[in-house]
Length: 176
Image (cartoon, rainbow, N blue to C red; front, side):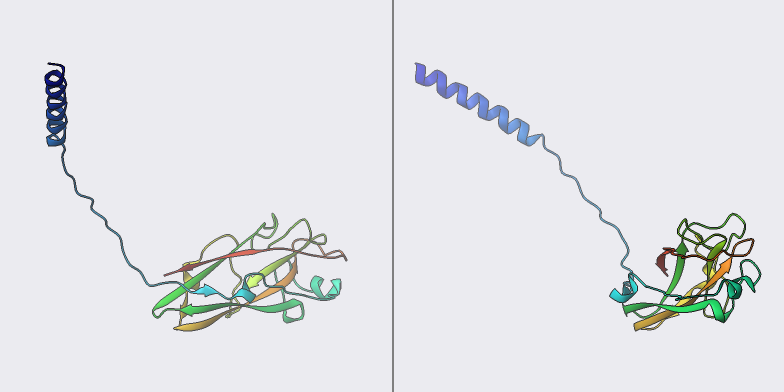
């Protein structure tokens, strides 16, 4: 009799389990997305670009109006991109603290008094700090590309004072 009660209990439990399994529903996962052209890789030497001005006479910097520079106080630098796909363009945004007197001039607490830096594109146009400017998009070729810029030492308001300067400006590359 005990065996029949246990068997009956097992059958009832199995029936309940089957009714639960029969109540299961199915669904569908819909995945969407967009495959795009890849981006370039920043060359290892362009991840941290040192630009050494050496020794610059304060009188040379002070000869220019605030926010301006000339070749005597400018240095060229290049951001090298590798493995670029075809049909791609790039925009570079330079980021850093700017002068309250000259909005296009990068400054830092490590700059000698009244000095700052401006960055120019290949055409000599001063770039707007902390802003991606779509007018400065550069068409890239397949493979290796060099984005060339110039950085100039300038005064922010009054004449610069002699002393050391050091400024770290970061950059972001956007691809289209």
